[in-house]
Image (cartoon, rainbow, N blue to C red; front, side, top):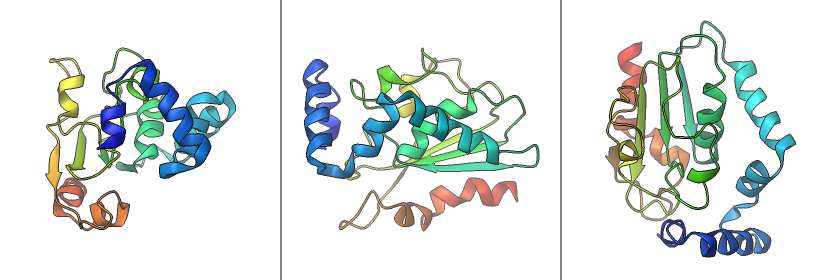
Amino acid sequence: MFISMMGRLGPIARSGFAALTSTGAFHLGQVAAYLDDERVRESAIEAVLSRVTPDTKAVLAHSLGTIVAYEALHRLDQPLPLLVTFGSPLGLRSIIRGRLRPQPLRSPAHLKRWVNVADRDDFIVATLKLRKLFPEDDAVLERTRRVSNRDFDPHAATEYLSRWETVEPVAEML
């Protein structure tokens, strides 16, 4: 919740984010590296794109991976049936959302379906209503599916992957 609240505070959020990153709190160094270093950003995007082939049916992305997937899939020049994001910080207003590319927010052009999954206790998830941040005519991103992960680590990828709400879209496709 602290990170979510920081995301609403504009310039204060950015300096707070920098302070948290420099102390290593919340392990945000990778996020800062991605957003602040063009080489890191491009390398991460290329790593995703190099693994998405015409045979790829789904991309599953967690946490920082949702940011990388969002940006990478906008560069995709082939159809992708499904993106599943979970534990996503995409909605963090001042820290993440305004620094995403492209702007304004919209689903990637070649993406057919986007399912987002969130736990209300996940400290990285900024909003349980990611859909509201996208244009009304964006028919690709579905309403966020809510889950209840274990209290000791609601952000863990393994917790999300053990929930039917996360794996059902993949199972439907298979």
